[in-house]
Structure formats: structure tokens, C-alpha cells
Amino acid sequence: MTSGDTQWPRYQVFHQEGPDRPHVNSGSVHATDEEMALQNARDVFVRRPDCVSLWAVLATDIHSLTAEELEREGLPESKNEDGDAQTYQVFLKKTHSGSHGHVGAIQATSPAAALAAAVANYGSQGGIVWWVVSDTSIVRTDPGEIDSLFQSAMSKPYRSQSFYHTVTLMRRLREKKGIRE
Amino acid sequence: MTEADHLAAFEARISRGEKIEPGDWMPDEYRRQLIRMISQHAHSEIVGMLPEGEWITRAPNLRRKMVLLAKVQDEAGHGQYLYHAAETLGATREEMIEALLSGKAKYAQVFNYPSLSWADMGVIGWFVDGAAILNQTMLAHCSYGPYSRAMIRISAEESFHMKQGKEQVIVLSQGTEAQKAMVQDAINRWWWPSVMMFGPHDQDSPNSPALIKWGIKTKTNDELRQDFVNQMTPEVFELGLRLPDPDLRYDEASGNWIHGPIDWDEFWRVVKGDGPCNAERIAARTKAHEDGLWVRQALEAYSLRETGAVAA
Image 1 (cartoon, rainbow over the protein chains, first blue to last red):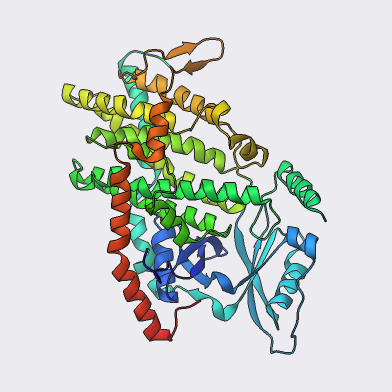
Image 2: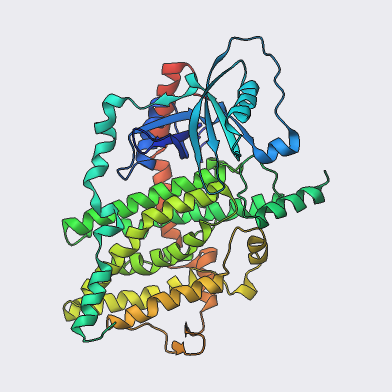
């Protein structure tokens, strides 16, 4: 491997399955910039027609707290609270089997304060992981480009298992042989 | 809290069925085993593109070609999901790729066998993906959140991989004599490598007890292998095809199909780098990585020009 040959910074990706659904974490991609992050996110996570919008954010811009960390170490300390408040988007993993989904936005003066507010506002029904992200750190797909980004997946029904009739084929074969199930 | 307290709390969480997430306390050995397993799994998806990729340009019709292209493309994506899951544990993409290209990392031994005829595309889909799905369905219940989520997504997408393969085997098995002979030959070559995919017998699998204790795996290698043999055998016979195992028999008492002895010398030879295609597979990955270097350099130069620095 050549020195200086890196796989680029990591972006976390969130996808939205329908207009009224929350953005949910899909995984991450590596990219040199935001535009490439969204392009790679489309290629890696949207091979099937279940997406209307993608968000990407540098993994290092996500501030995370797990319920286990909260119990073990308490809330992270907020240092400088003098700055102006800004908008943070909050993602919550609510169930053990689920993913991190967008639940809302809060105003806070620091990431630590945002996490504290996220726990207070979005933890009442039990939370497992909280992520807060400054709204300005998120890059979003342009609604005007939905068709060019996501429509091509619609014409590929062969990516779905229902396209293949193996059960019917096996049944016909048995019938032909006179074997009754 | 002492290390022992942390470990007790961690094991209690696992026994309650909770998922462990990045940031949570975990034993070093749990992290090490997961990185080993997930990166091997990622490499398997990436190397697994090669035996099938060779046949995309030789598909017998446009439908089969589009299906095979979509399947191989999925495998590229699944490799990415899995590298991501390993990255959440602190492994870097650079070190994982370096480990693969230098021959240090392992991947599923089955991809070191050659794909010699079009019928292999059917049999790989049915047997190899069928075996992978059994393993992945189990891993979807894994105690590590990011791995479990990757497995749920992969299992949902891969259900078509197995069905497209099985469909082809059914069609070929009812076709001309030449087609029947071609698919039987493919089954003869892929059966044992598929049976070996589940890994060594339980008593010879040193990692298994820790993996099961910590909820990474919920079934043993031999349990999964038995599920596979039970699932495949009756349907292969129904299609009028044979399996290359003279000792294979049905056990009335247990309801299991019992397979004959596995050639573990062959298994270890292929795992350790001396299979029919190991060198060819790594050479193909190395070439892809080296051929892509100028693209990565161009993107870096573009990013530097636009922003003055690569986002960090």
C-alpha cells in the first residue's frame, strides 16, 4: 500500500424510506467531501427502491452517549456554555434490535449540553443510544434530485426474492412425478 | 468498578438479550473476536464477487445477466456494510485491506475454488448463498448491535441470491441431457466446499465457546452444518440429482441427514492459502486496489483544491 493512500474520512449515513418517516442510520461510507459522501451513500445503501432522502455527516461530528455509558459515567461535562445556542439534530436508538432514528431537534450551546438535553427530552420512554449532530454538519440530498438519484432502483424487480418462483417450480415438479405433498 | 465487576455487568447484559453498542464497556477479547470475525466476513463478500464476476459477460441471456450483475453488486455493498461494522470497533479500513492483500487475513475458503461452467452460477447461488444465509440469519441475533444490524440488512437482500440460484438448478435439472450433466458436475464440485463453509467440527473450533458465551454466535458450526445438509439433500434428490457423498444417509431417529467424513486436510490447505485459486483471488484484489490508486489520488487533489484540506 502506498504511503498516504487512505480510504478517506468516514461519514455516517441516514436514509428515509418515505416522506413521513424518520431518517434512520444505515451505516457509513468513506469520502473526500460531502458530495461524494452522498453519491457513495446512494450507491452503497440504495440498490432497492425504499429511499426518498439521504443525510450524511462526518462520523467525527457525531456526539454519542449510550445508556450504559450514562449509568457508568453520568452525563458528559459541559465546559463552555457561553456560546450562542445552535440547532442540534437528535437521533435515538430506542430498542435493542433497532437502529438510530431521527427524533427531533434541540437548541444547545455545546455538544455536551445538547446530549444532556437529548437525554432529558428523548429518554423518558427509555433510550439506548443518543446521537446529537449540529444541524450545519449534515449534508442532505436535494429533493429536486430524488428521481435521478433513486428512481433507477424501481425498475429492478429481480432484486427481490418474490421475482423467483422456486416454490411453484418445485411443486409442479412433484405433481408431474405424481408425488403428493 | 473493577475489571471483574465490568465483566459481570457486561455478561449480565448479554444474558438479558441486550445489544452492545460502540461506547459501551466490552472485554478486549470480545472486541478482538468481533474484529476478526467481521473483517473476515467483509473480505468474504469482496472476494466472493470474483468467481461469479467472471461469468457476467458469458451469461446465456439478458435476464440472467442482469440478475448476476445485481447479485455481484449486492456483494460489493455487503462488504461495505461489514467493513463499517468492524470500523465501529476501532479497526481501520486501511489495516483491513492491507491484511487481505498481504495474505494475513482469512476469508471463506469456498471462494478459492474455480467457477468452471455456467451451471456453477446456479449451484453457487443455491449452496454457497444458502449456507451463508443460515450463518447470517443466526448472526442477525448477534449481541453486537452494528454487526447484528448489518446482518439483518444483508439477510433481507440476499434472499434473492439463493432463490435465483435454486431456480437455475431446477431449470437445468429438467433440461437437456447436456444441461443435466453440467449441473450435476457443478454439484459434484461445490457440495463439499459448501459443507466445509461452516468451519471445523465443534470439538476442533477453539473460538466457539467464547463466541457462544458472549452471544456473538447462537449456534455451533456443526448445528448450522446439519441444518444445511437437512435443507439441501431432499430437494437435490427430488430434482433427480445426486450428491457426491457415498456415506450420506437418513437417520430416522433424529430426522437428520448424516453426511460422510469431511476432508479437513483439504479445508486447512485452502484456508491457509494453498487452494486452487487463492493466489489468483489475491492477485485480482491487489490489481483492483493498485488500478484504483490514481482515482484516489485525483480525488484527494480535487478535495485539496476545493477546500484547502481533506475533511478530517
